[in-house]
Length: 136
Image (tube, rainbow, N blue to C red; front, side):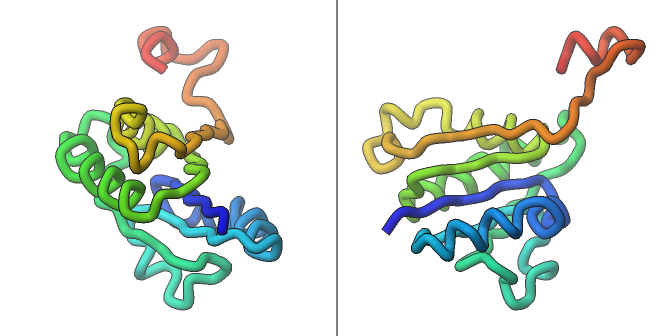
């Protein structure tokens, strides 16, 4: 059975934007899981996902918890579940997840996992703060 993990910083993104996609893939026979901070409290009945995973991270890109806590959690879940696709959304979740999986080619159990990032909005724009734009 094919499997996918949708990851977002907050569960609202999964609920408001990605739930129809999760339901579509489930209809096609895929196992579809979701991961976000506080997701267990948000999705009491999982609403369209087969399983949900809570991850402790912050929307602040400089919060060390993102690296110290979230990275091992992401690696643990993805290694154990062996997803075919990991689809990341929101900038912090996308960066941390891709950072966590940066050496996946060396890890046999997750080397087959494709990672996709969909940008839903940008932190940078014309007329924005030059330093922020350069960083992002």
